[in-house]
Amino acid sequence: MKNFIKVSQAPQTKLQLKKAILNGSILVFEKDNNWDKDYRKIDNVKIILDLWSGFRYAPSYQGEENEVTAYLGTSFFYKFINA
Image (cartoon, rainbow, N blue to C red; front, side, top):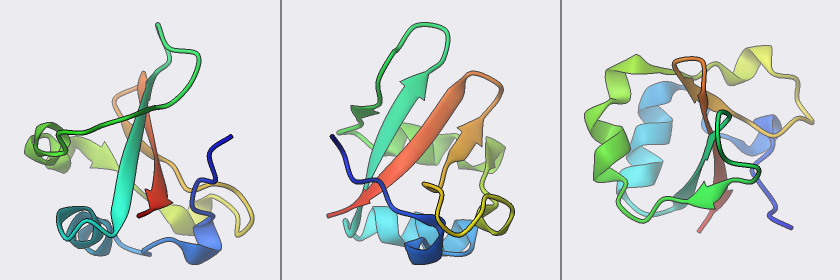
């Protein structure tokens, strides 16, 4: 079982999250709700950073004890783990 970052521990802005991904302190996991049952680790984060403007990330609306989630469109969900 993966211990994804809770909202209370997560970067609070999209820019802070991007910086943490770039410096390697946060690992990214992806789930395609159309096909995947579990989250899988993304090794090449350059792919998601190229699509960064389309991401929705709003931890303040997700509840303090929930795992923080980012979204791309309606099918792709992203969760994070501290490296």
